[in-house]
Image (cartoon, rainbow, N blue to C red; front, side, top):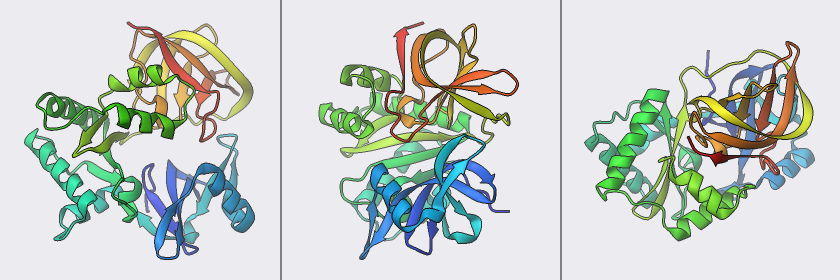
Length: 312
């Protein structure tokens, strides 16, 4: 049985490419979000609003209400998938190319640096524009590490390469571009402070690279939750071992709420155990009485955030 995972892309006969957002199927559909459309002879990346409008007007059969998530999403029936783009396979294809372009060569050089750190490439993949050969000279490099141990080894390797001067920290311009792209509900200073301590970003030949974790065994919760509305709290994080997962998960010390679940990469790895965070998101309540807060209930996550207000 074909396994569809987050960070994979799926392509349909209409020339649409969706980013998979959740492992597994719901009612025979892959949960995903429209990212690219074939226009003329190139892949055109679509903004969120444009993607939603395009589906509503031309492809409404890919709009889906998830009863599991109580949310409106995009979804593609397995039968409608013509190409399954997989990060691991694509990375190996690029590494074996005889005439890589400039972006691909920067990726190849980066992988060679990882090898000097004793890191294996077998558990790495590439997502984003490079996954479907839609890159342009300004494209980022989005690395996927499969397995938490591999991801954290990669972060340590990144730190060592930064210390050795073989990779560079993001400069002011790169941070501003990253902040504008995220359009998050933190100030610029707060955004950069949180990001700089994650060690999942760097510059390679002036090109931004991002490290992403795909856990081999994602944390699952089979309970059905009902949305109860917006909420803002402060609480101490007691367990952050799943902070870089997708979705990221923070166990908190709170009299009513058990955890924070985050579906936007902006707040992945945002806090460590012992820190006090301020969380704004959507409160959800399960049939068992368990309560949690969702950050990233929509793609833009407007009005939703995680911010450290007291370090450990």
